[in-house]
Image (cartoon, rainbow, N blue to C red):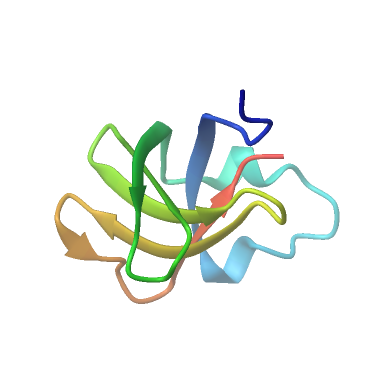
Length: 85
């Protein structure tokens, strides 16, 4: 039995609103997706999660998105991928 999360919600947030002085990041997300563990390890060395067009390597301990593809492409300039709190 694993204690690592098997599902996360990934938020794509414009860079200029990531530190909005305490406002919920979820309110500023331009896209969100529930991603589930694939059982694979990504090129970053972290577990891979996928769903709703997003494939992300996520460090389950720190909840940091280490690598991400959105609809098969790299994340657009000015966007950050984050795990929802």
